[in-house]
Amino acid sequence: MRVKYRIQESFYYLLMAAYLLIIAYPLYLMVATSLKPNAEVFTNPFGPPNTLFLDNYTNMISRSNYGTYFANSLIVVSVSIFAIVVLSSLAAYVLAKHRFRGSAALYAFFVAGLIIPIKLGTISILKLMIGWGINDGLASVILVSVATGIPFGVFILTDFIRLIPEELSSAARIDGCGETAIFGRIIAPLLLPAIAAVAVVNFIPVWNDFWFPLVLLKSDAVKTVPLATALLFGQYQTNYGYVFAVLTMASVPVVIMYLLFSKWFIKGMTEGSIKG
Amino acid sequence: MKRNNGNIDRRFDRLRPWAFRAAFLLPALLVYAVILLIPIVDSMRLSLYSGSGLVPTNFVGLANYIKIFTEESFSTHVWGAFRNNVVFFLIVTLIQNVLGFFLALAVTRAVKGAAFFRKVSFLPTTLSVLVVGFLFRQMLNPIWGLLGNYPWLGNEATALPALAVAVSWQFIGESILLYAVGIDGIPSEHLEAARIDGATWFQETRHIVLPALMPIVGMVTLLIFVGDFTQFDIVYSMTTTMANPRYTTDLFGSLFYRAAFSTPVRGGWGMGMGAAVSTIMVFVVSLGVGIWYYAFKGSRKGEV
Image 1 (cartoon, rainbow over the protein chains, first blue to last red):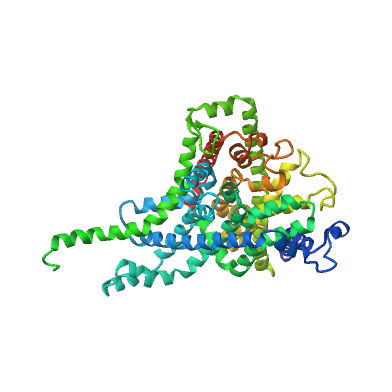
Image 2: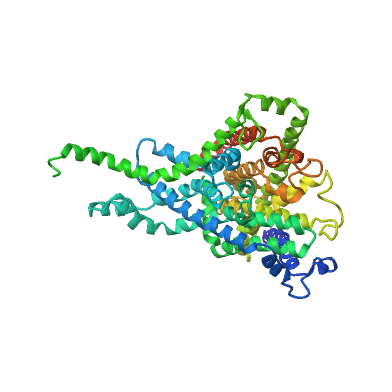
């Protein structure tokens, strides 16, 4: 029995170690190659860099509009997350605390969006944005990101608000608070952990989105990081060190976000997919 | 004042909760409906039109669909993308579910390093598919690539599996995470009782762990299904929108992009035809969701 357990245990360890290597090696290779001059990539493709060579990064920033692309992505991600959080928590409050005819159906209507791929409406979205005159502008990508994020936001926040005891709001109601004040002064501060989960989980798909920027944005001045990644990859494909620097740069923000907030992130992810 | 205008006041009181509800609900509802839901329906409508500009304007009824299913130059692409997408989905599902399951078993053992592993295994999932695709394309390059000088992405037999492996590499962390949460949720008395009764590892896994995980297996498979049948970024980054070699890596997502947004020289079919492709995708995805709903209905009820 003991021995059998030991064998199992070592099997699992071996499996984890093998898999860890498989995850880590490509990521290591991405960062290591980005720190090598192109000539060294051919002589020393898989080892660590011989010297700390930062030219790939400085070239990327000085010779392309990388600063603009990066700033554009930051604008898209921060405005989108702000709007997702505000719109979803307002809707979630009514859905969680007010029972009226059709409220359950309305909730289901929102949550259905968790599984509907917005990509399938792209042609009509493009038509809409052209009609509003905001295609080829960051606003179009922001609107799409907000619409994509709302179902998840409403789902997580409604669930969370339902757990807040009714006595808190009824006590305030007796003291003469209106609904808006109850939401603003009592509910909203309690929502912060759930809001953090919604913000962190949305950061990643919004930052990484490539499809909608590709379809909607044409001018260089409004390009986001994924578009810049594709652009620079196409231009410098055989300059391996440079290309790997571009890939690393696109990944740094999401990796930092994940490592800093992995607890909230994992919480949001599991709730979003298992309960939904 | 209150006593004087009792009727009006009461009516106002009855209206007030509605005004408040509408003010809170409408912004989210409007953005969600106008930008996510209505465009999907409107795209289906646009599939009945044709025209050369960005917005198709001539009503042609089902002509786009007739073209797609009867003219060989269109139908080969649609059936090709469907076939490739099924193969792609099967490979990813197999790797992500089977390997993900065993790795989740490993991380849920109370062993040293399990928590760290859990955290790190999710890291690739946070990267963009575009970055992962470009990274694998570079790693598989035949000049100094990691797997020798074999043209993995240039060969018709290996290109599509290579794309599937890249996507599985990225998203297996999602399976590990969700399965591990499921395994954590199994009451430990069940496992202890089985061990006391002398159950082997296989019996324990087969009769206790797997049945408890079935709803999550269904959920993970559904996520893979919807993701894979709308996947575009991996094709763009590894084998371009032309789905090289010779369209053998073409998926619905890349076909949709090419048909709707590329110039005729690069495989464009015009917006109306593009809308028809996305409508076909709506049906394929809905069919998959429907099958999932009936297949896992029982196991989801069992969970509660």
